[in-house]
Image (tube, rainbow over all chains, first blue to last red):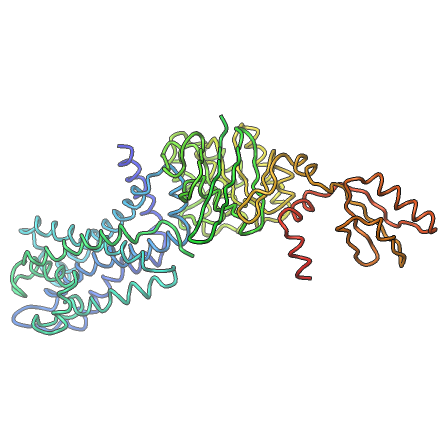
Length: 251
Length: 304
């Protein structure tokens, strides 16, 4: 009970600090919306096989939102609080370290989910892509699996980033190429080599699952093996994070 | 029960032995200072006591707990002011203090904490906009906001101007007057002299002297310093004990039998019709003792 209270309280403070930090709020929150708007402006008029670009981009940007909030932002803020010594300071108090970390994870997931709501609403009202009300349960499971997977990978990666200045370079060098070959920014035919490389990683499976929920006409309905891939990467990410995570700067 | 007991503490990083079997006891309610140059092993020792590092061997007790296990009850009763540690810079001073107070079972009143460290007129300022000195005071505020029985202060006044240091000293003595135990690391002699009830001087991972300031100074073999100038003349070599130094016309002589030495020196000066200008007889300052014990003096003259 005490831990739950501490968790809720810590999330409140994290949230307050998050919205006061213009860079964090912009890159985590505004980025996906800007991407959606720009892609729609560029590809909006294209219709393939009776589908609009928005039917591809709405679930794709939903996937991007979770990746951005859980992987990219969590990895960078974790490196920042480690290098600045905030983690070390908290570890010297009676606050359980895992509760502190859980609060950061929960906050990332909540930001990701809020983005999902905003992106879905944007897709529905601005571009006429209906929200998949009939598949709420599988949507929720997919989003939670994705959040768990990308949070675990974000924490795992933070252990490989040597310092705060290197964080954006390392994290983006990993995630940007993946986003391009994972049917998030552009659609790649499944038999293309790039798509097959993308299939080794979790981002493409996550995006395909969401597209299966929103727009089954694109690649068919949700393929559960996609969800298994995401779950597998979640386990791998957690195993690596447990080994590489560090509470203190190595400098 | 003593607040801290350290017995034969060793800490190695690979081949490097950072702490070489030190033993010390910090009594409840005292300010104990750990003095030494950078690399002497102070921070390693303190971080073992705080629960941040495992020890290689030896026994350590902090408030009766083994810090290596980091028990929550121990962390609830200690306060830690690290040499440098970040704070959530987008929160205000009051918010950060409240956030950290919430971690402790019996926190101290927020306004009282801010008043103690002298930040009572800045509660609504964002942490990122504080000056360096104010940030350091906030570090102390976060260290004491849980009303700890034992406070670790790692170089609390580094970078302070003289007035700010006096204020910080007053705060620290005030905490001792409340009955808190304080373990202070510093490399300022005057800080140890102003605050510490007892101190230990570390060098190369070992304690080279320990006790009250008086005990440390009187334990020194050549306890008295005699200084004088004699122009171009030079006293006969048999009058100068080993280790005497000469710099620009002046002599600095250390003696553990100052009466006899002074008698001989003044006798020689009278016979030679010389005046011992600027003659002074003094106990070495704590700084002299410290420099001699830590070998920094030797290193300094080697460099010159």
